[in-house]
Image 1: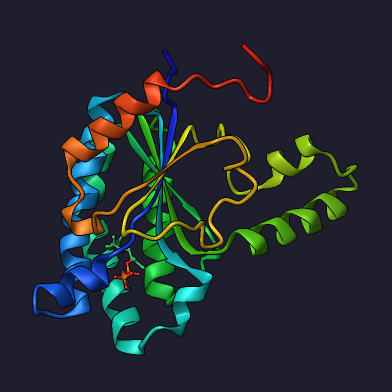
Image 2 (image 1 turned 90 degrees about the vertical axis):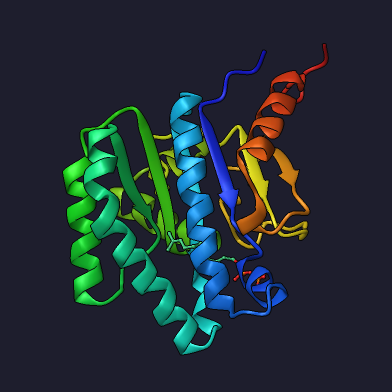
Length: 225
Ligand code: FPP
């Protein structure tokens, strides 16, 4: 049976969900956040050690200002409301991506990371203003500055995810079969599950089905068996 340490998720389909319900894209994001909470609780129950969530990409800045503003205010309210409960449940919050937001949000993110930094039950890597190609370029710069040799090991170690094992599972909801510049290096050997459901409809039953299917997969990592 394959042990699961790390699940990564591209939470796609909020906007379409809101429109399908004859409401707004932002309403879809609000409902999407409820799914985030459910999946965090389920991950705790399943003893998953790392959960990486793609919340905002470097490409998402192309969206209307009103949607961007709504997303970040949703995140702010969510953190203010939940960070103490995260801490109580030994959840560590770690941001991957370039933190160049408002001073208020940057402070809140830094403070949330600091408060939870010693927790070791579940680490949530929240990808915000994250792009994998830009991460890889920054990593090469870091390696150069440190005077290290380029190798698979030095690259892996100097990514945002440096101390974290690569994802065992990638889930993408929303009926779209692509990686969208997410963890391109880290996903080299992950099992990928593309789900038709839009993110607000994704539920704990779907999550458990994927986890159970993953456990049955024979992972050879290029070997034969
Ligand atoms: C993708 O759906 C979703 C996002 C770009 C944002 C993800 C945000 C949440 C799940 C809720 C908020 C969570 C936090 C942490 C603030 P989409 O808008 O691209 O959907 P579409 O493909 O239907 O347009």
